[in-house]
Image (tube, rainbow, N blue to C red; front, side, top):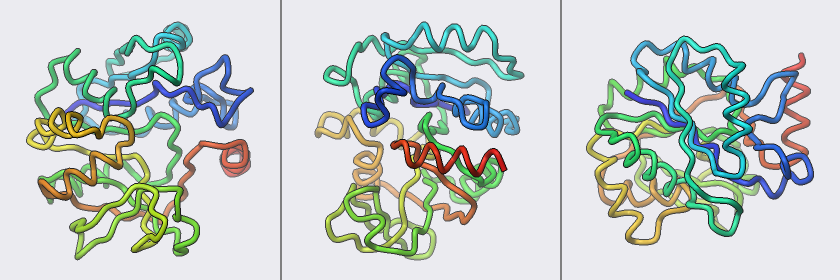
Length: 243
């Protein structure tokens, strides 16, 4: 299994902090966000390589960071060739780009590079092995208004996702998708078909498509989670991680 960290966004909502620095390299409690993710991935012997997909504008930032980062696993940087928010490939487009660049034909763990979460990836992977189907991590915000227009929202029967909608106006549950996934080898073959139907940007659009055309399960956790997309969420993460 390979791990893919999606780090090619331009984080316009975090300007000026992210204007000249990629969001995954912004520090939280003195350490870049991406390193918290990598620490959790290091615990997984099943992961043979970590692919960090970035854009051309910030590629050198990641290269300099990687030169000073010590890892027990092989980390490969992939430049998606884009220069600004207008020509970005989108999260699913970047996943597809990485698949083609590295000729991936195996299960893949995919994590957004701005995700800070408390659950164990060992438990996440164990859940995947029991289902042998694609899975995503879900966090119950316990408030419909908190997920409204903000997150991908899942509806489950047992552990199986039976409905998924990206940023719904009228959410059917309070289960928010957290941009942590494991896609099965079989489902990755469907990514290109999904992109052809216009689902290249949000990973949630791919999940919605897979719910309709395959089988997806939800891993619900109750540890902390920060989707670092605003100054407020970055400050909240800083406060918790310093404690």
